Image (cartoon, rainbow, N blue to C red):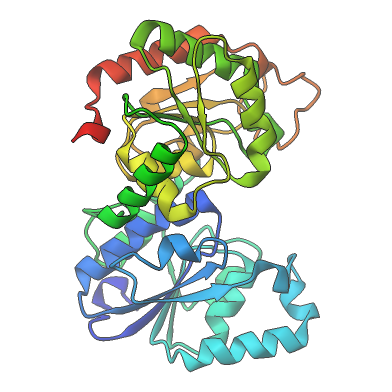
Length: 361
């Protein structure tokens, strides 16, 4: 089968990309590309329940199929919980999908693609865990190291889709209004909006709170950014509070845990600059076209950096970089601990000087 001969006009397609937050942001561009190629395509997105609120409002998405990850945890999870699998299989078949695009490329997502009974099941050539055997059309992907967005774009390009004209998360004015209300209620006084997400899931991605505080104090002294806004999920509250306490000149507004995903996307869309490590909010900001300064250590910017802004990544030095490890391999987190905050603030100052203030427009 030649992928370029596929016609999905008026058809029903299931896009499988349940997680993570960053990958979901990258896959939004794929959804835009598919809808641009076939405007009458009915696109359903299988997504983790955690991220469904971010995906559901996208105007290029017609429906969502929420998936609770804990139902089938682990590689063989779907095979060990037969009752749950039968129930979810019925949901998949009831969709009566003509095609499936499996962007996750793992055993579980491949199995779900096969259980839909869709006549066309598309996956990438680098699919893992045997998932490729559930696909009946495998399209080439560029070799590593390559950014996740470029891999997804290669798959949609093989289906004769043009390069995505949009990659954003379709933020609405009502969502911006809710974000402004959160800022106002937290005491934000309307200066240039600079957001910081200091948290991440891996310890090796974390920049020390005292270093972030030094960056914020430098921006307060040299750029008049006295009220940076801290954001993140509720489990990052301790790190955000530690950052606030370590500041001597800046007076951060702490919104950690106070925003839903759509309000977070709106806030980062309005920001003049976002400071972050390798995190989900980094990818949200990049998708919205907001300038991002990303501090990265163990991970490879070529694979997971802020898409389109890899030149704004600041890295330290360690002989093992990028080690791609969740926990430091006995190097004392050198890549982050020894990274001078002055280098981060210099990059931020340069971007602030060039970026428009989106809050005031």
